Length: 145
Image (cartoon, rainbow, N blue to C red; front, side):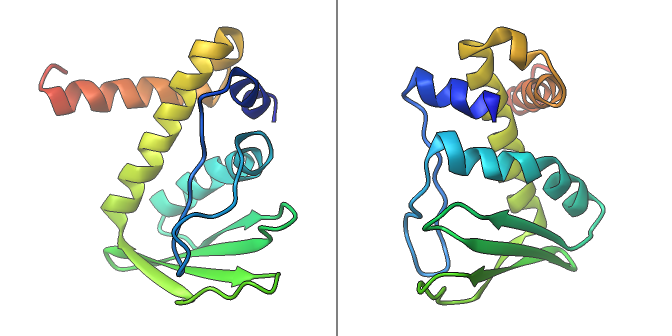
């Protein structure tokens, strides 16, 4: 929560999610990203272990639960709404590697942004590890690591 508040106060950052028939979900950095990031380590661990994992986006107006269910080389994601909004479709599928790449990038970008606005907090776990992992992947992609 403190990390997301620091990022929100610094401005310039944004948190975007889409899918299930809606191109842009109504999310903000201070509260919605905080709700997502507090569950993020469990999401990463669950996907790496090929376990079903839920993310509860509980903020007022969003109120939806995403269930990530591994299916072979893909992940089926179910969206359940607790508002009048109805996801259409209710299920989406992504290749596991593509989803993990998106989540790993999110972790590294989050940690890098935090390092810019609150260096002391960025040195705390898990942010420090996310930043190191992101830097290693960037060096590998560039052929320098």
